[in-house]
Amino acid sequence: MSENTRASGQGRSVLDFVGAFWAWIFLLLLVMIFAIANPVFLSPFNLQNILANMAILTIIALGQTFVIISGGIDLSAGWVMGMVSVVAALTINTMPPGAPLWIVLTVALLIGAVAALIAGLVNGLLIARLNVPPFIATLGMFGIARGVAFLLSGGMPIPVRTEGLGRVGNGYLFYFHPTAGWSFLTPPVGLAQADMRQLMGVIPNAVIFMLILLFVAHIVLSRSRFGLHTYAVGGNKEAALRAGIPVSRTLIAVYMTSAMCAAFAGVLYGTRFTNGAANAGEALLLDSIAAVVIGGASLFGGAGSVIGTLIGALIIAVLSNGLVILNINPFWQFIAVGVVIIIAVLIDQARERLIRA
Image (cartoon, rainbow, N blue to C red; front, side, top):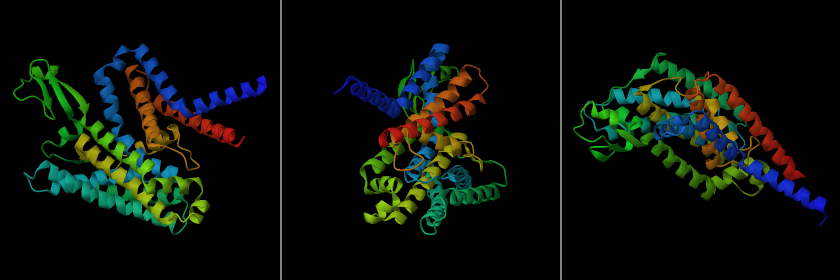
């Protein structure tokens, strides 16, 4: 083997490595820069705050992961989330006083999930059966879900005053107090108001919900027949059809999965902010797509992973938090995320050229 051939092979290996792990490298660089600029960034409180704030975004992005891997896009996810948050808030407010909180939340999630799944089913049928382009079909559902959400809410957030609801979304798995010690799920009993300042929460509940859904999505995408079919449809729909894969059913299931993730995000939003808002997911729609693309999913379909989506969501959350800590205008986040998306697409295209070379 000549030296030129060996050097070329080594150069290609380096490019392959950078292409595969650039998001991890970029995330590490961001953390180092923000930590050096302000040590508060690495404080346990701030790190937990980053994770809790990214939970809803990550859950929506999980649904987008399935859609983008299948070769499509879901522009309705953010407004389906808002619609579900409104439906869940209305449901909770109609529950009888004194009903157990877990029953209230279960009923709200079930009714919200039904509303979301109808939207996902319509998206899937339009795309799979009527061959409507995903962009157009989900853009139409974007408008429908938006209109329904605003009609149900009257254009105003719907407050939910059910006792204990806020503790579900904003609470922690463990609490620690220097005097009272550790407690599980609820703060130690008998603490005075002055002592509450020393109370520290460990592992936000929102992060637990996110991790559970991440684990389920990872297993479904990487180990189940449905996950394999999703990759196959996104990689080459015609080949998938010839291989006997039920392409239509897979696409319908993919868009219903995205809608279900939006439903979980909508209910989690309600528990965190104790209200339902039609525009709850408006700002998260493009960020959810960005998280999937930054995480390595190909916009051409057939490639992507749940872990990659998590890294993409982390990058967006770290950027947002770091800019705030450094007192930089938060509007710079939009520019930064846009630049990162462009870099991700360029790297994806470069990897495609390397594979074909």
